[in-house]
Image 1 (cartoon, helix red, strand yellow):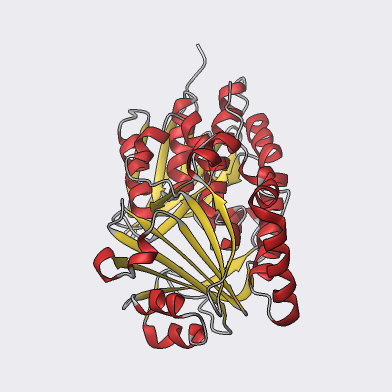
Image 2: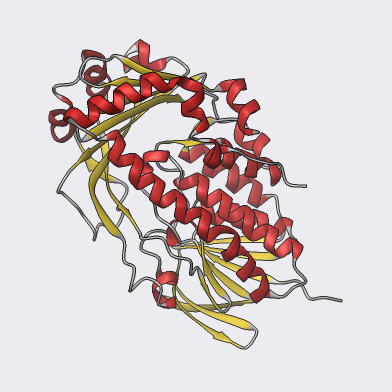
Length: 402
């Protein structure tokens, strides 16, 4: 009788929890180690494109997630200085028919809650909070993992280790992958805010995703929690950075810092920005794509493998793709850990690298100014919705797994 493989995952974010569930579904025992003492439901809204929701459906998770998610009817793109509509891309049933799965928006805390509940229902998954992975060693067919619980050193062992521990991944660094390809500062900052519906401009609460394009900045907004809040993300070029902050994506900020970036925009856009009284500042980094995601019995996943700029809103989606591919590699394998991790790396590295590069290029397009912005706006208007959606087929299309 074949012994049940044991996976250890560092990190209980979207990628780590999705991977835990996918591996448990593949017949493995999974231990998840999360450095935070309490796995809190945090963050703001995020978009889950069809390439992510399709994978969640394959895993049997989509129904659980859809209890919290909303499906926008359209993506409306406007010019920042005067609010002129440049394009309106239909979503809803049209997007689901075209790409094979729904386009949704969700509060990050609700997504994490859905994943936590799913993992809690799997007896093969154990989640340990307040445990920080500090190192590991591969010895033959096992991986020995050192960790700190408070000030106490403890040890775990498994058949393999997955680092889903974010941009500043300890696992990636200990593999030697985080030295030659350090995260790249983008020169941009994202501000995120959640505004109660009663305080938001009524037009912004329509069931659609709004995208405003301005010089060196853009603005995204959409309702979450079934219209309870308006989620706002404002991104601008910014020399400020905070590489050493403990919560790099969750730095408190205020209106005085963000409002000047959007002072010359159309009244409706400024009203959306002004409706938020509290902001969280997030300096944006990514990493040059790499085809190397594993060494021996240790691999990386999500932001630890491929942090990316949010111009295609694909950070969480690509982590979900990683998790599904990891589960598939072990479900299809014969118990050979190295072969399965190699298959996972092959399946994901090229694809995720292409999304990293495309996200960078999209950022340059969004933040054009002067004659380049004028040309971009003309192209968008002439292309029309269908041809613009054609350009997303490579990213969003999902073919259900057999």
